[in-house]
Image 1 (cartoon, rainbow, N blue to C red):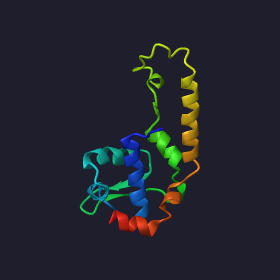
Image 2: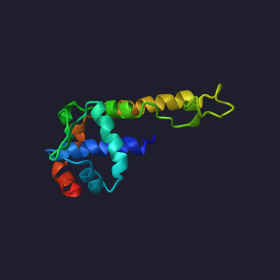
Image 3: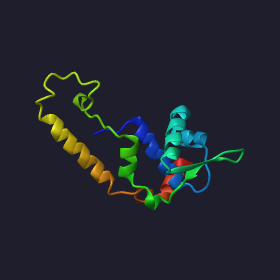
Length: 141
């Protein structure tokens, strides 16, 4: 299974905000991870719509977690930002070109594997991956 870059950036943003107290900017997070600020703007906008972060406007504005890390389930977040994890072409009705798709047994197995993947993520909260907080703080600057 492979999550998209979008989901990766979503989880990284939550880790950053869960590790560092206070209000932070998108540029600050992008610089800490060495990732595109433009991609992060979209991620932050979606996290705000989903209720995971608060956005504060103005000169001293920025973003912060809207909920405690204990209330943020990684599996739920992943499913919300990655509703279709198309691990193979036949998962997508729009782009499926495989001639054996109607009878192929692999599709069902991969659906089961995808469900198991998300089920494992659902066993963890953001707080679970923030445990090495001091180390995270050092690495994030």
